[in-house]
Length: 339
Image (cartoon, rainbow, N blue to C red; front, top):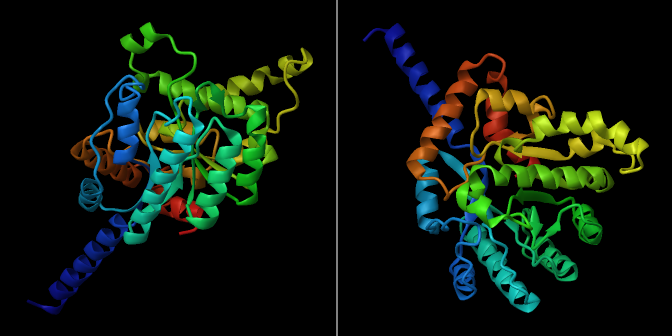
């Protein structure tokens, strides 16, 4: 073998090594934990199907296996829906505390593989504040997970301002996730499962509710991660902006600080990601606010791996998006969580 051929082989091996290292840098900001005590509580309250479909099976071992196969370095764990509140705040506090301590334990044991965002025992705001302080200050949670609504208490509601102030003081990252809307038409849910459409409406509804009260503008240290490719926000935000002058004139809303509100929003690409979806998001945000998300374990590992490979392919081939590949797959998340 001549020197030129050896050089080509060495360069090729070097490039393969770099690509493999890059693949292992992926950070998944949309992954779920389903601990057994939480499942036991849902079973006790006959709430396993509260969101309209069965919860998937989950184990830490299976999650690590899929991460290894997919080349995901770290995953951010959050609790699934529904919220473990069935009218008893003490019970909710107990199951939330157990979930948070289990999440903290997982991170301690697998510090290079997992981050986690704490669950809070809403709708009791005082209990939620107490748990947020404990989770962030003592357990060293990487952020907080908030449902779009808990038993009809929607984010953006005035009574949540005291909680937002606590999260703002701690510069918290907040992972948002849609839950069953309240009220909900049962016939509609039976005919069209929530995950097919209503979750997108629910996410959009909640962000709109927060924008009209300037939640993000008033608490600028909080970074909110919007799930599922931003739901309908790329369509909804231009409409909201266009109608704002009319609504203000009718004294239905106050002044909206659009720039500050939108600056605090990040978007995970779990679900129906595509080059078109990313381009739509870039009409309301910047490339530094886009994040990879899997939605594990709701989707089969093989499907998730195929989806991730498709994302890497178009982020390599599409000329206008290629420059953002590493940002989306891991750099933005690394910066957001400062990890």
